[in-house]
Structures are given as C-alpha cells and as structure tokens.
Image 1 (cartoon, rainbow, N blue to C red):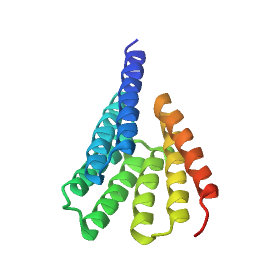
Image 2: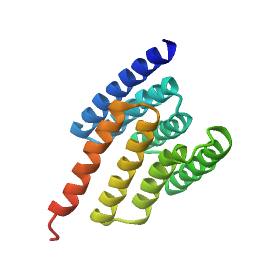
Image 3: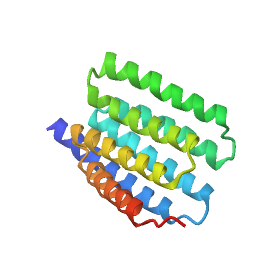
Length: 171
C-alpha cells in the first residue's frame, strides 16, 4: 500500500511539474521562463524522490541550479561546462554503482547531451533533434519509474519537436 501511495504522490508532483513547464513556455521573458522551469524541475525532483529515481533527482537538482543561474544572469560558459561535467560524473557513478541500471543513465545522457548541443551548435534542426532525443530518453526513464504523467508529456513533446523540424522552412 505504501508503494502505491508513493506512486500516486510521485505522479501528482509530476503533474505539477507539467503545469509549471506549460507556464514557462508561455512566459513573456527568458527570466520568467527560467524561474518557472526551476519550479518545474523542483516538482520533477520531488516526483522522482517518491518514485525512487535517483538519476531524476540528481538531474533535476542540477537543472534547478542552472536555471536559477540563467535567470539571475550569472551563468557563464565555464559554469555550463562544469554543470555538464558534474551531471555526467555523478550520473555515471549513480548509474553504475548505486542504481546499477543502464536506464538510470538516460536522464544523464538526455540532459548533458542537450546542454552540450546548445553550447556547441546554433543550428535550429540540430537543437530540435537533440531536444527530441532528450524527451524520448526522459520518456523511457519515466516509464521505468512509473512516472506516467511525465512519460506521456515527454512523448507528446518529442513528437511536437520532431514535427517542428519538418515544418521549419529554411530561409
């Protein structure tokens, strides 16, 4: 019964995360968007606390720090690279030694890969492709942790991102 209650609570936090993510998309400023995405990552972190997803907790914790640094205009290239490296190091240690699951590496690969892509490329299609992969990896991870709300959202977002790649006309 306790496991079922944690499952429900975890998915409730995930639903709150989805709401904050939707609000962030509608934000009028980058600063506002980053604050709402920090709230999104906070709820996602809590979701994975209840669902037992240490990689999800780790990745969302680092995302909160990154988003707040961006919102406060204190993010630099060095900080971005440092956060990517920290995500990779702790994520790989967690995946191989703690969770001992290859699927626990998905959030690490998704987040650090997408962040690295944004640092290295300004190309729209490259960014959207990386974002699609990001969403797909998170969807599989969400399903593995029974985070059904998150998994469904990630699938919808991946399809939307893939669709936008093909709808964008080169100008």
